[in-house]
Length: 461
Ligand code: S3P
Image (cartoon, rainbow, N blue to C red; front, side):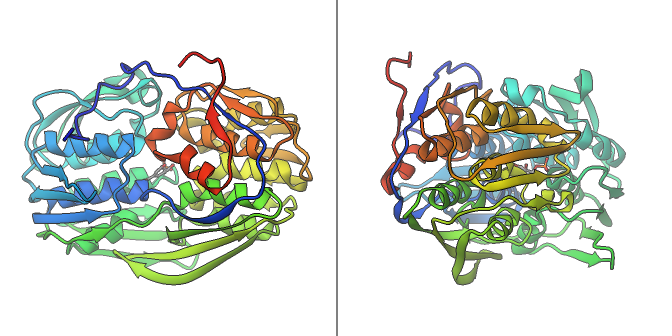
């Protein structure tokens, strides 16, 4: 059996798979999407710090998460995949990470790189981190800054970029850190560093961001307290050096992946689909709240709790959407969903204004520019005004007929394939490989519902 954790160095597999999405009929059926990416990274990392063997089911087997699995192995944990798709992680205990003997390549994954920096910062070991061309242009200074205060040493390229070397603190110092940007990755890096720090490490979040790290630390037996002020600010406090114990867990389906099928079903008249077993953590579902405001028929059924996270089945029926104003405060609850929301906005009646999207400029690509450029090439009037995105919806009639440059970014790639399903003319993307970072099997799953996504005829594979 091939080992899914043995990966080629990023950027060396030179495969490009152009894909085209043809206009499609109504979508019908029940699907499950792959496991949540954020939760999968954290499950592997925290299970690696727990004593004993944790079994994880529903883990996302996308490239980003497989790179984290490989990284945890390089740091000394035993990480194996079983024949039935479950994963087993034998942890080394807090303080037990070993120095990796080679450079760790995080591929396309900002979450992998930043959370790993946090873990290493609390251990007196040295590691060298790199990634693909997209990750090597992303800012790491935002994570380095608090980790330096804890006592880590970091040597990075100009602008704090990868590749970088990090030596964790031999005697980490507890800090209280106020997040200068709303970033769950920065919060998580500080908390993960705090795990091997004596005393209380705390993070002040002016705007709440996804809380999977806090939930996962508790799942393994650690203590994280959260105090919320009247103004909505959160003080998250972790008690350092807990003894974490193995604790099996199931990863729910990723709401950020479900978003693509949901919007496709809303846009294609006559559609009715159910996406089962989706994580509905309040801090992740700003997109669904927004779509409902736009007139979407989306219901949450069978609500339950699994692995410390709320989960539901989502029923989506085709709906006529209208433009809305999306406030900046909502951005952290739906930061990865703007590419697909912008597609929905292009098909809505009237103007949609999405405010406060500066962070989109430092994602896997400059998503603000990518969305505006792509929508314009599909015939939708779109404007960037400062950090706001304005889309003039065409009430169901989008010309399409464009080829989109994906620039190593999975989410615009999938969003524009959805656009092609509902537009008058097909929409192509120059590279479908990037989709594997978060959503392996995307095209097949969409086609199973009635989509028509296929390799671009005549394009070099
Ligand atoms: C993530 C946090 C977000 C998000 C990313 C996953 C996480 O990034 O965009 O896809 O798992 O913590 P930021 O923390 O940079 O906002």
